[in-house]
Length: 193
Image (tube, rainbow, N blue to C red; front, side, top):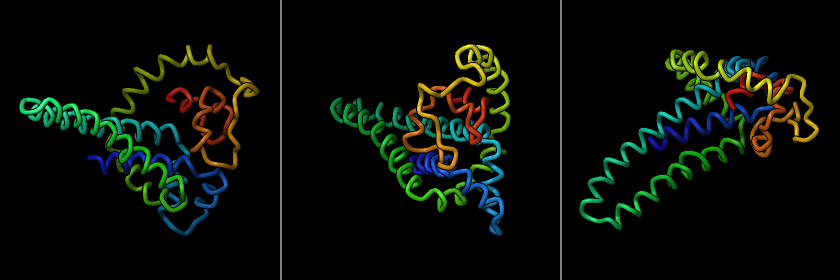
């Protein structure tokens, strides 16, 4: 499960770490997986929802399995259970998030085509959940989001993304609302974030 979590996390980083220029190159590529990356990133909202749903489900499964395991350990040793209760979240953060994302960020052009097939398959499986979330969670918050971040809002107070670089890295810290002006992701993805 930890490997699955890391794979999904790395996929997210590699796909969103691609520049528009690279995506344009992938569109014209003779390699089908590169063209699939371009096709996926034409709907970044769907890609991000897929990643968030999949990774959340995997991490819930990890913590559920750990809970049942720790429950048995706690009966024999409270100290061992406490150590394990700290070790499991740390393992998820380190091996399910940080290391995979760092690896994917080091060469998103290499990792993104490998991730494209998995993400496309997950999208097919998760489309019913995505539709329900879109309709009953995302759509109702749209009016509130527009009041907080009106269309055309200036990004003067927030570091805006460079359109030729990917979304990953320091740019993720500036998600405060100026992404709606970026070509890479639109207002719907901004709502999701």
